[in-house]
Image 1: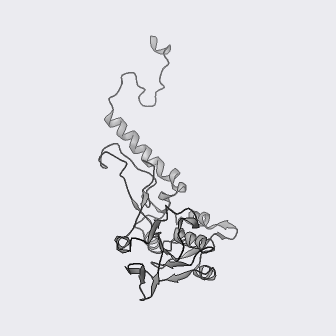
Image 2: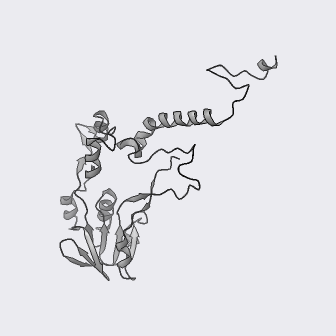
Image 3: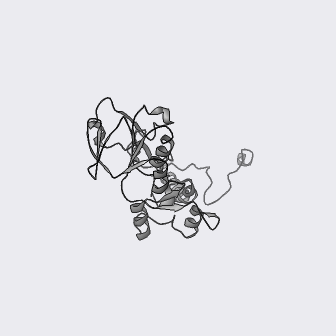
Length: 234
């Protein structure tokens, strides 16, 4: 299975407490500013998707961005090279989830700064607030006690693992996965990590096939070349 895991949006239980007339979307639902009705739009989640959506909406709406954990943004390029290239060369993308570097990267969840710093967002007219703590009908309540009357909520609160399309036991022999975030290291959830994660999975698949499939008498063994139909007649 190489379809990835981060598909359904992770919408908090808090979403059920808002008034029925308040429109609610997820980052996956959002396409353009027309998706939001008139009035103030609250984007919950200040990751890459949340910041992009807030900037897109700021041209036509009053936008409030509810933040979460402190995040670090890194420049897109360093000394003319893409930062992802430097991270790869320095083996940061090879850091496993349990390593000291891996734990730091998971805690800070850095992403490229494509003009998405808080300074730039504020300059675009976006109202940045602390974490969303509660609601009272249409009123959003933030961690600092401030209140905002909101017409549309857009939940950009990441995604969750979901294997609902698999109708067999996930522990079944012969079922293997790729493209899982932090499966082996930071690059595992990226296209970049496919070439590195694939060989051990392919080896495991071949080993499973050798052990589970019956051996054919005419199958090549120990690297022997399979004969053609004419070669095998005698």
